[in-house]
Length: 296
Image (cartoon, rainbow, N blue to C red; front, side):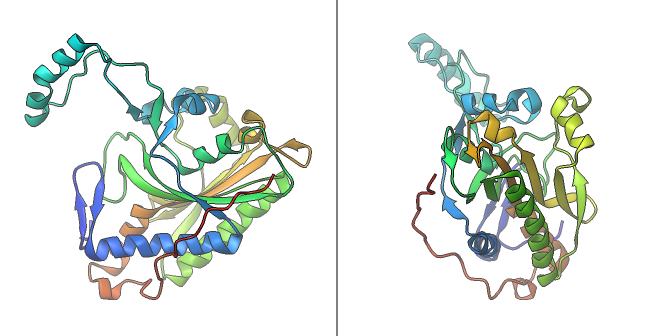
């Protein structure tokens, strides 16, 4: 990988300072400006999401291999004594920590930024489409990790619409055009490609089979193997699951997702490790904006 000054790697996730941090912020500012043009309201959410919420989406059935759990020890005093007797020693020696008894898991580290929106709008009837955006630190277990390209924890900016089927499709088409325009303006080449989500045992998963029969996911792929953005149509899956209505029917949803570290990689790979050669010099970081309520 081409070095990116100010990027630090710990084996599964990245840290940033200096030029790399500035590039990271300018990239997200560019995505926020796209969200502004679309009219999306910005939100900030916690790092964790309810396991009950993900269960309603059948997430654990579809992606058990990707989940990162927020685990807490059982508060029994003897259990805590057993844990602390060896934890520091084992972790310090690089052996990892063997947990003693744990409490039932109620929270999961967020796997996708948009998942916070659907319970937020649960059981609401929308009189107009809702356009929304958020940036989240997302967590997905992988078989291996690569700096900036494939990480356990990574930054994701998403823009989401909740509306009618026509509104969701119009958003998806605009999103694909906007990403292509953005890439061209930066002199970057990423090819739109029909894709499917990385389901567990996809040959047995009805959602995976449905995606193959009715393609709903487009990825923009850099260098032949790295998806840097995706446009996803969910039909009425989330609207029906969470009781969100629009125009007398379960709402349809669509989202546009950017992997921010992957865009950092793409720019460093194409333009090299001299920040003076990077594009985005004229992109400022986004202003602080007040959160507004989206009327139902």
